[in-house]
Length: 415
Image (cartoon, rainbow, N blue to C red; front, side, top):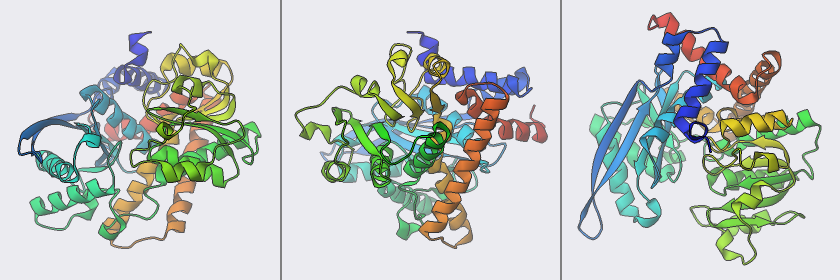
């Protein structure tokens, strides 16, 4: 495989450069925006339950703050790397640009396996991370949020630790909090709802009815499980789902309420069933919509020709390589790229931050209505660039996402 294609940071930089050149920006802008402005690496000592001390490595990347404070999640995962965190912070900038939010992109991560840690060990790690990054973050500097294997409880511990350090209550420091601590209604389901809106728009373009549409979802974590629930409720047939252990397939449609009831807190459910298929087989199932909602580099030049979906909607970050994107586009399949499809999470995080800042909170209908408006506006803008500039949907999304930041950099006089 082409190493350039499958390195998430390098492939992101390739498309950033293409997008900026198409928009008429020069080498100086490319040089500035292809890398984060700041990357903090921290070491976090944590007293474990057995009395020993383990030292964890954490990162916080801030891509660019020309538009406003940086914004992005914190993931707890054994495979977190510096390159990945940098790439994810750039993707967050693009999501914020597509949604027209007053943010740059940020992202954090800690190299750990939360599945092998106790509740109290996770609390100590969460608080230790905030102490380590506290000088660089805040409601008007950099606003964290949940990501892979983090949740509202972890956000609550982080907010509490930041409020102790600053000696005043700071709900706007972090989003994805429990409702009772200033969280927004609709935040937990926001990414999945945004993906649902994109699926509806894509099906409309392809003139396929949602009722009876065959959906395959790779990944059954927060986004994947809610997506399966919403698609099932809309009358679609979810014919395949997967987790890290394998995949389930039924051409008549899976019993989604039963699977949701059986899944554990990390999204695992296939280990309870004897007849499973591999994740690679799941991706190649004949379906109307394929939703990669797991990890990077799942659709590559190796399997792109065998994808039988009409529409691919990327709920995960970076699931399709650049070469696979070209192959899929050449075949006439519709690809809704990650920086557009999964923007629902940061949009509702923005709503939460706004509500925290003004001290006035909205009901869920208002949140959903505003989310729908912003997602559809973003989709129409990206699709229009795709048609008028004759570029693939990924490059169109990057052009829509990077334009606002590049113009803000120019107005500030940085370049």
